[in-house]
Length: 424
Image (cartoon, rainbow, N blue to C red):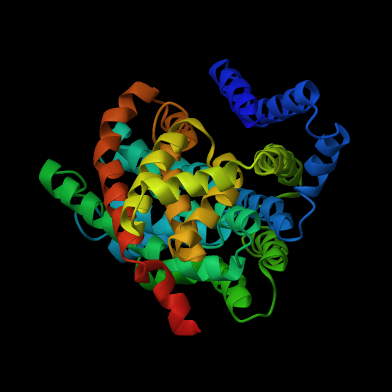
């Protein structure tokens, strides 16, 4: 049965059928043809897969990110980042990375980060003489921090799928997020020095004090949300609701950039994005149940245990497989399908499930910036007004930087779980 599901599903992928529809159709077809489970199980598993309190955080964080985008918060964060690093050559490009990291600390979404920050930073970089393809490639890559820096929607999905503490995953995401942000900043600085870009980036830069005053309430947002989670004041799901209300109050009452007329389009956009993710989770939950029922995880575990002798080889193999999977399957779908299968195998090799979660998320997030289905690429190209073929060449250095960071995260566990162990 498992083979028929996967074959049918891959055939539907080849026909460009949406991931959630392909998974559901393949699962229903297999149940109907082979009758290994009653058809009622399909409806039951589709519902129970999303009947989870932690998953309620997903639509709320998406809504919070969209409210931030419409409420003028992203503009102030860009100005704040420029006030810190904008006085050096390439400072505007470096501020793109810094802003994405700050924005990601609330939105939890790389696509939301791409649109919110890219709409401001890409035209600004073009006006300062940066090539638009470079600006778009940088924005798409830096926005990947949206799924690594907590609160991260993919980390929530991994926590639910692998039954791992979401709070622990959030704490573990801080180290990898800082590592990737630092590596990208250094790479961008060197590229600007070598190519002579960004010599006039200090023009139009606000003072640190002025920018901080304007962005103070926006900067307080991740402190309230993430601080509340780590201190135990509220759960990640409750934090997502707090983020929504905070974005509404700051954008509407204090900054006055968010109007009542803006709310309906923001809600529509958030509902559509949430529906796609939740449908994908429901479909993946059904698929996971059928694959587990067929004994696939146990067979994979036995095969891996026999074919691979040590954790280093296992992690290298998993990284290679996940990199390929991420190029063709959306990150959220890949996590909810593969996490229940791979996490138990990782535990067999004595790999910490929290550490393994960060490896999975960082690796699969690269699929957002690799052709042919990189969602960040399409978003950045749309904002920059360029074609996909123009951005691909500029992506290679950034992808190499992310791969280097992934290897460090993979083989130096303290990067991710070191802070968690310290706090315990």
